[in-house]
Amino acid sequence: MVYCMKMTFEIPAPLALRFKASVPKGQRSPMVSRLLEFEIQSAEANLEAACDKANSLKLDMKDWENLNESETW
Image (tube, rainbow, N blue to C red):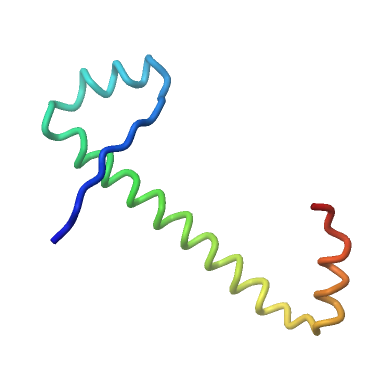
């Protein structure tokens, strides 16, 4: 069973008006869900690709520690 959650977002008024004019009631939540799913999958794929690229560098731990020490948090 899939549970749903109500969420509140702020989007620019012109976009909100276009959305309400273009997408009928009853189709808005499914459309937002599909768009979010697509964007999240894309972000996850980009993160995975970045991790794969970083792992392929095969830095030894000393090089990795030097990279971390140069970061300012």
